[in-house]
Length: 549
Image 1 (cartoon, rainbow, N blue to C red):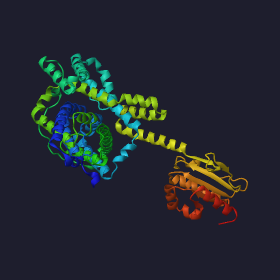
Image 2 (cartoon, rainbow, N blue to C red; image 1 turned 90 degrees about the horizontal axis):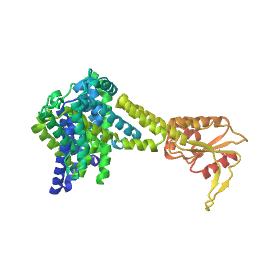
Image 3 (spheres, helix red, strand yellow; image 1 turned 180 degrees about the vertical axis):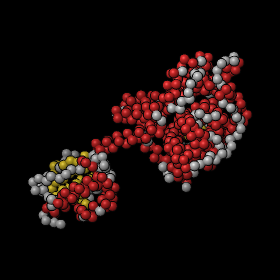
Image 4 (cartoon, rainbow, N blue to C red; image 1 turned 135 degrees about the vertical axis):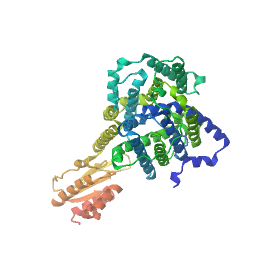
């Protein structure tokens, strides 16, 4: 079980007081950054402000304590906002809690089964497409609060929200829009002043806009106008599990688990590049599972590794999981002591913060690079995933995107597979080679590339000419084969047998040979007709041509 050892245990072996001071400083700074983000992401997810802090506290602490990365900071992230909002709208908070607990169990299972490395099989175009799509859905979801619109309905789906924005735009509150614009200006301009960069721009935006709205008595909605603020500690609550509820939220649970795995491991890879360390992906998945399940049981929402907060932790000196645990502890103090002041934060400021989050996560530069440099088929997968994320939801986008990517992969592999007649070139040692004629009674076909159902139709039907009675199939360049290709080869063997043609297989690799043995075709053809190389195959063909058995 050494492979599933939390990084905290490894880090503490050589931990010093100086290391603690660095982690303490980094943890406090990250907590200041996480405070407004946690509240904003909770509101974007359709839950109360304190639930965002519950998530950052509970999941943030456990994922740091048990995780496979030394510097990962976990908490609510923008990627989950629209998913969580949809689950809450359809199934309520009970449904969300059940979906998150199930997702946690799935993540734990993935980690225990050592499937952390499987996440790399999610194509880059799909992660780029749905990340950009989520960014657009966040922006659309915040237009109402940014402009202070009065909706006639309470839409759930992204396109419905966009339609409602367009229908009700005449109700715009220009004071609210001005407050939002002020917050955006602070978010964009504050980091440009080098001496002030250490203080998070989002915190300054919150303080300035809250003070302006309060002191000037501006007609702008604040968090306190729309939500009841609580500074109570998280309470353990076991949701009421039922077959109907589990069946309803199970697809959402898989979506949460897959997205949490992708985003957390992506964040861990970025952290590795910044620190030169190496994370344990399986331990990270187990920690993500424990953190999410605990978050749901204590009133929180789904969590995952947050790239921006993780990067801030590293830049401010964090080098062990202690920094993430300190970040959770500071947020706990804020919850108990300062939470009532969150009621003063204007909703347009929250929207502005989420606009910036959406911009940062959109990866538009990456999208442009993919569009410019990738094959049209990959661009189509990216575009389809992006559009489906915006128009429908992430579940549909991932399923369709993966299906398209798999189909394209199979087509490319089928295009690589080649079956052609072969001429023997003997190595003469001078780099030129010498053509060595194949005996007149022998046919030689070379099969190249993986042979699976997409390429099986390339295995020919045999139409012998000139009295040739031996067929050699050279398979040196076939790394793998599936049952469909095997059936095609068996059909070819039976055709040859019926026509009195002997079949010899040359240089069959390990995996295809195992398929031959398991199917019984190895015994049917005969071990003597499986040659280790082309020279042995030609020698066997000569033996058969002279009447050998």
